Image 1 (cartoon, one colour):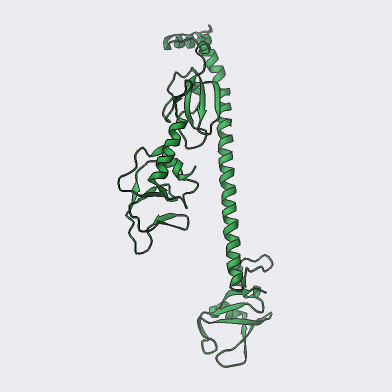
Image 2 (cartoon, rainbow, N blue to C red):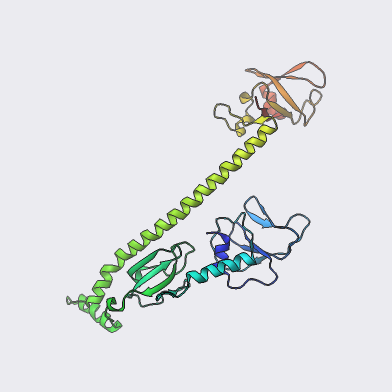
Length: 315
């Protein structure tokens, strides 16, 4: 669910002085009062004001809410929130006997037969009220409106005394009131059916969000690969070794750039990068920029911390 949808449902009044709202990875909602710049999300985690600009950030107390699918990018204004509230009013409109439901406890007797309209527009007809989840759980299967199925189809009223008498009678080997028998028989299968519908909806939401995240990750990776190539560098592919595997000098190749990080600085300049001339079984061969000529380095010396791998230029 998008942040504007969460705020439209959970926020009854827009806070005074707040110009925009965002959501952090921990589901907390932040308000920004300043309008000199837009807030920034750091690494898809937390929102903050740009450096040197105070946007008047404050936490908005809404309670337990779900993490929005667009929490790392969404900046919701008062106009966005107001528009979403108008959409919800249309969904909750009382038309053809439909009564709005605001996500609290079951509003009808448990054994009443009802029709339900969910947030995703799906309608369920003729289910026993006790078999549905009435409290909102922040998904598209939430019950947004209900109506009595058909008065003639409602089960005959049964008092609590009659039910208790029936239960006592059953314990004594006598008959239980028929309404109680029907309720017991119908409740579990209907619960299973409604739970299946709910799981189908949740599965679709999770699958959609998963595909979106995969697409974002793929696009970001392709962009970074292109930027790397633009600098004359390429990703390292050494027999399945990752970049982390380049801490082992045996995975280096001629042409790789390595950096002097300490020791033997009379041969090489600390912080400068050098090109590997050869990789031998025992170590490396490189140009010596301080004294001229080439210099051999044993693997033990490399491991001791004289050099570290930097990058591999694109061929």
